[in-house]
Image (tube, one colour):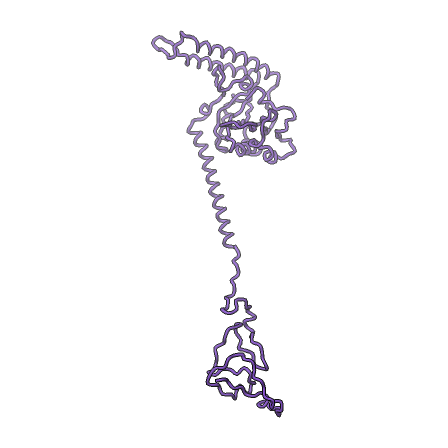
Length: 379
């Protein structure tokens, strides 16, 4: 982070405040850190809870000037220790000599205390919790923190501002997005710890310590030649490792339980959908001879009446009915003849065209027996 990274430019497009017309969720959906590229004009996305914790610009500049001078002196002193041949690399308790490392750490600790005094004297005490999120998780992490700050657990703490780094234009190996959650006073241990607990218990985040905005402005980072620690608070200075682990474990247990419940609900919905799914109507059992015959057609006779002959026995179309008597039915006999005619010794061929009537039939006297001559079967 640079000197101006804690200052939001006027009329900056990529920020949301409680006075914004756009709802927060719409802002977060529109501007995702994984999708917004930093072209030099949009390095951060910001979400404000309140605007009442920024230092007086004039006082802050005084603090920066004094702290910068102090840091330069410390850097020079550290270099002298490093290059002084009279100072041993290892300490010698018998001679009362301290090692280079021990002397450097003493100078750095004194510098930290002096920087704290400068900050408090000028009221330059704002700072932020640091969190790093990988590109594949940054959208979810940022969404959770921003929402929590405005209407979630973080809203009940002293945290008042949050930001996330946008994506670099060119591909950067092992790049992680920096997420910052701002607090009004980095030296208020109780307030800072309260925010820490929420970030651990409610968001399960890996925290990288608390950094003063003054440190950012004078250029202190983990690689600064002075060796001054880049954070005011390390995690273990505020909470024990066991407490940190316990809070994170509670968060992940809750997340896993929620996932299990969601999975069960999905499975139950699938089962319910399968149970209520409409079954296909069963098709009517097909007949051997005519698979397309309808139930109505099955009830009607499909035989045609030929020359006054009675219709064939009802049943499936094309299906032969079992004979009720030994002799075959004479197809061209009338109802009366059917009763008188004796069955032939052998079967006649069905539906054969009627024999030509004799000429003397036309001279019949109109009786039923004379009008329909008996048909003889061929032997």
